[in-house]
Structures are given as C-alpha cells and as structure tokens.
Image 1 (cartoon, rainbow, N blue to C red):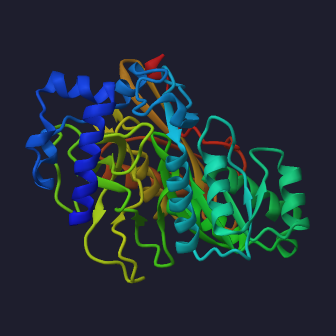
Image 2 (cartoon, helix red, strand yellow):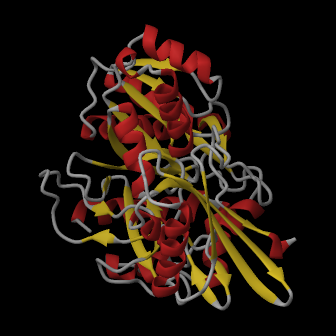
Image 3 (cartoon, helix red, strand yellow):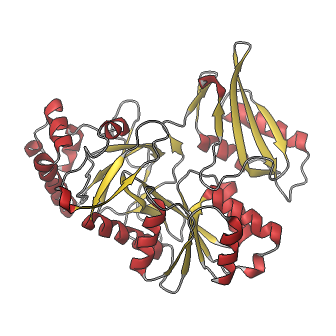
Length: 413
C-alpha cells in the first residue's frame, strides 16, 4: 500500500470511529483502538465485516453521514434473507461513475461508442452504474434494461449499438438469437462488457464468436459501489482494480489468515473513500487471487484473477468440496460439449448422486456416448468422485435473462 493509500485509510478509520454507529459498536465489542494502527501491516487488528452483519443493520444501520447527505440507496436482492441497503452520498455516486468510466476506457470504449445496457435498473446497482459511467465517458447510452429480446435486437440494429452490457447468461441468449435469426451482418457490435456472475471459458468463446466481439470481464458488488470496481484489459490476464479507491486482501476463508500474493482465497475489500456506507475488511465470499507483477498493458492498477466461484456456492458431494470453476475447467477440455451445464445433486438410497447435464457443441461431431464417458472420466481424475453425465442438444437446458442457476441441490429440501 502506498503512503497516499495509508493516509486515506487513516482518515477512513477516524471517520468511522466518529460517525459510524455500526463500526463504533463493532470496535467496542472487539476492543479495537484505531489510534494504535500505525502501519498497513496492522490492518489485521481490525475485525472482518460480514454479509450477515450488513443484513442485521437493515435498513440504514450502515449510514455514516447525516441524512441530508444521502442522495440514493441501492440494495442487494435479499433472496437468502433480509436485503442489504447501501446509502450513497453525491460523492459516492461521482466516485462510482469515475471508476465505471475508467473501466470503459480500459476496455477501449470511447465517446464515439453506443452502449446498449441490458441489466436491470432500480434498486439493483447494475443498470444505473453502467449508465452513469457511460454518461461520464461521453458515450451514447441505450438504456434497455432486461428482457424483451425482440426489442433488444431491433434497437441493436437500428441504433447500431457498438457495445453490449449484460450478464453472461443474457449475452448468450442474445448471441444464440442473432445466430438463429441470421442477423450477424446486421449488427455493429464490437465489444461486450460482461459481469454479475462467474462464467467459464467455453461460454466466453461462444458469445465472442457468435457475436463477433471482444469480451471484457467486469467485477463489482452492491456493497462496494456496484459493478465497475475492476475490469480486464486487452491482455485479458486478470482484472485491474482501483487501488486509489479500494484496498484488496486475499484470505484463507476458513482461518481468516491473509494469504501471499498469487495464492487463491476469499477476496476482502476495504473502501478507502466511501462516505455513505464505508466498509472495513468486507468478506465478499468471492474466490480469486491477486496477480503478482505488472500487466503487459502498462497500467499501474493491480490485478485480481477471474472469480472462480464463491465460498457459499461450493457444494460437498461424497465428502469432496466442488466449485463451479472446477466444472468449467473440466468442460473446457472435453471436445464436443458446449458451454451450458446444470448440476443436479440428490441423496438416493443413502448415497449422494450427482448428475451433470450439458449440451452438444453445435459444430461437434463427437458421439454423445463418448462425450459422456470423457466427462465422467475427467471428473473422476480431477475431482475424485464418480458422477453421471447426460448430454442433450443445444438449447435443451434453460436459459436466463438474468443469472443462470447451475447447481440444484435437492438434499437441502
């Protein structure tokens, strides 16, 4: 951490000690005196902040500024409990737009581009975040929001959109429709900025090839502004994050120990400038690593690797921990299989049974039985358990305009 970062960090500690009831109480319970922190190496004195604590602070327990400074709120979906409400000041909104504008520029997007925004608007951070960055950059926003694929394609053609923003699931829906309707020559897309869910290399290549675009991973979460806090560049070797706004750590998700650069673990984020709801050592549950060294693109911003999964989307089958990223890596090596898959887990006759459903590659000529055998064989060699593989035609698995549900665990019912 640079001297400038540490000065921001000290100011953050002073601010939350004086103005955040949430952190004052947290420091009191944990016996923390922020005046004792004299170097960045002492950050581990501070307790982690968890998603459960943010839910318990519902609705506005995280607020750290007077009411009149709050100009907006955003919220998580709350599908697994109380939603998390994050208040924003005008400066927070401006800082977020700055990071999003930077992200566009790193992806080679300019004021001459026309950016079609398909994520949702409203309490969710995605749509309005992409919009604000687009306006700060000076590009033309086409604020479509989600769904209505016929209209999406019509506007894409008529307005000659050059950039598509969306989840990987909806980008795949659009790519498949463009291919099916023979519209490839009618669209002018050059780039796609894709985020909101973890996705594999096969899916990335399908979208890239069917739409004829270059694709950039973008990262963010509601608790930490929203999308746009990290993005990959033309080198596509990890995502640059903005260390003048945020401090990243990687920890062992079980022990909480900070891991060295290069090792994979849970991402922990401290917001250095956030006013409305500053967060200290927030456990994101996202699994990645800090990539050592400087990127070949020449940017000074440090990098994290692509998100390989979440600590809470890991499933244990037959005593073995399995992450979606491992499944992506296996399917990437199997000829004839496409990007879409679904995992069904059940407990039958006293045993865990895992079925991996996938689709044929549209241009593959490998026999279905051979694909299934290869998946089962690789799964046994790489992960160590026997599964059932079922291969069906392209389009047979469900598609989503939002995020795809890839793991269905009936043992939890």
